[in-house]
Structure formats: structure tokens, C-alpha cells
Length: 199
Image 1 (tube, rainbow, N blue to C red):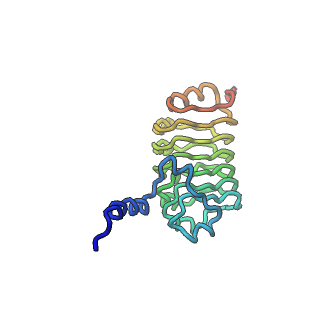
Image 2: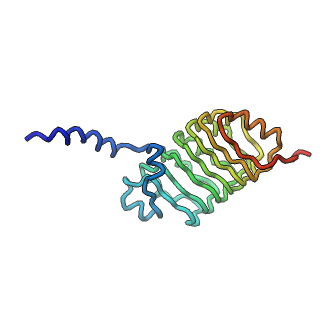
Image 3: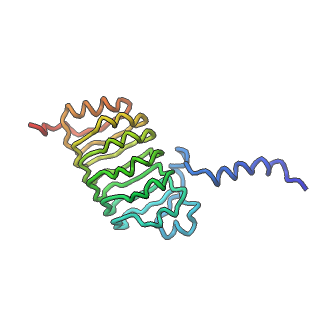
């Protein structure tokens, strides 16, 4: 007995859903968010968004890499000082929230997350941005509010998709603010009032 035509037509769609890993913009904002790693690991193939906020994490748990379809990872309000070299294994990551951690050196491993669209690193202690940040050509939003940033490489111009950048609560001279704006002409950049830092 042959299958009904409708079932045959739907099979590729179902198969595609199972294989799909990169969520579109609407799905990113509406996908189920798992809270806590233990819950997520019970059905790892269904986990696209994971929130590990306020877990007092000093490092990322290895079990995180058992979630093959992770698109959104929220690590807000932890105690992270660095990120593991394995991070690029989360190759479908589009949203990474690291605000309010203990990061001083920008983890260059983030530059390997080529599909990253939103990166939030507000309220850390970052002192500079690495040249490799310009490799994030799909990045749309970059939040660096309240860091200790002093260096902004010319390679930031490579972030051609960037539309929003928050640099408030950072002391930046007016001339440097102008240079950053010229590097990213398509982005809306929020600055605090310029300082006379070199005076």
C-alpha cells in the first residue's frame, strides 16, 4: 500500500526540521528556553536556548557541549574569567550573553563563532577588543556597556552587519568616538559624554 501523497510531501519538511540547527530571527525570539543544565540534558536534541544565569559558574561545564543545536546561551551574572577553547564546537550559537561576569581579557575564542548575531558583554572588566572581532561579519548587536575599554582596533570595520553598539559608561575621548563611528557607519553607537582622558 502506498503512502498518501500528503505524508510523502511532508517527510522532507519533518526531516529538515530535525536537521535544522540555525534558527531564523523569529524563532530566536520565541524558542523555548531551558533553565538549568540538568533539565536540558534530559532532551539534548531539543535544546536551542539555555539560560545558566546566576549559577556562580567559574568555568563552563563540559556537559554544555552535549547540546548540539544550541543557538542561545545566557551566562549572565556568573563568575567567569575565561571561556574554554572548545567554545567554537557550539557552531550554531547566535546569541551569547556574558554580561556581569569577571572577564578582563576579551576571550578571542568568541571570534570563531561565525554565526553570532548578538553578543552582550556589559558589566565586565574588559580592557580592550581583539582585532579578530572584525571576523564576526554576521554580528548585529554588541553590548559593551560599563567596561574598562581603552583600545578599539581598526578591524572592527569588518563587522559589516553591526547595527547596535553600546559603549556607555566607558571613558572615551571625543576624537576616538569619532574614529569608532567612522569604522562602523551603519551602526547606532551609544557613547557617554566624551572625556578628556589624555589631558
